[in-house]
Amino acid sequence: MKIEPFRLERWLLEQAEIDLGGGGVTKLQLKDILPDFDLSMVMKYGRTDGSDELKSLVAEWYSVEPRNILITSGTSEANLILNLTLLEAGDHYITENPKFEQTTRFAEMLGCKVNEFNLMENKAWTPDIDELKEAVTGKTKMIFLDNPNNPSGAVLSKAELKAIIDVAEDSGAYLHCDNALRGSELSGKPGATPYPEYEKGVTTGSISKLGATSPRIGWIIGNEKLIKRCWEMKDYTTLGHSGIGEYIAVELLKQRDRLIKRNLEISKRNINDLDNWIKMSAGTYWRPPDAGFTGFPGYTAEISSEKLCRGLLKEKSLLLSPGSYFGVEGHLRINTGSTSDALSEGLERLGEYLATL
Image (cartoon, rainbow, N blue to C red; front, side, top):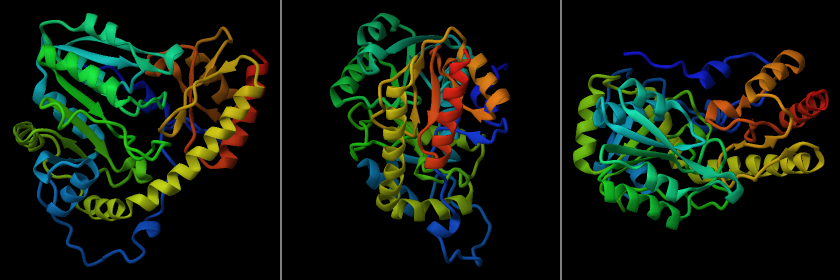
């Protein structure tokens, strides 16, 4: 099988003095969560579907039952397992745009035909339901969306998600919601997810956006039959996720409310600073996000987003992410989960560079 390079993830490995290319919040230190780490812990496999304690904590967050949950090695493995379990060559796969392209590349690799429906920037990045309806065919196996959306930070309303569920239900398609940004909603209310409202709804997520990416703990949430099938597939991917990661994840989820409060303080401050900068900067515009740790402003300069970002890296040692890597040209993804100093310095360098174009 051949798969296209994951452009964004390779790009984020570039070294820069100011790194605002990522999509997460300023990372926690282990001592912030576990000041008394248990050094006597035996380094062995645990349950390959996840411990009862961890599944119970995830279940409480999503108002489902532990039997509806499979623990995975981050959202990335969750998405991989789900696609390997459900998709076959010749299936039809629909994704929203802008998008985090990981799942789309999986579908293409498996031989699926991929189509898109757009989030409409001129309508606050709300989904074009009519376009989605037109994209659906008799072979549509899966509809994919991020909620909250990465990179725009838009959050689907319950009515919008219900409209998408109706389209999926009419066609018999699975509805996969990548919910990795759960807990980043500025309102403090988690964005809606398709399961259990829709029997063929599936949600994937992880602890990463709470401020800890290294433990690599995520999950799949869906009906029991699907979870069993996904667990069978996991036996052939990683078999077991990180035991130490699970230990850390339990503590992160126990302290979830405190961490979400900390993260939102960072995000709200930086969104306000970025909003003020855009208002004072000629040739830039945006729709402020409702969630997430990124802004997705547009610009009017006649230059591709990739070329602009490569120029910024070379001339200003500033790393931003090109909008084209998310399916939308003429935009930049800027990390709003960074430190205030990094954002301030990054915006100053961005302004200087845009002035030369």
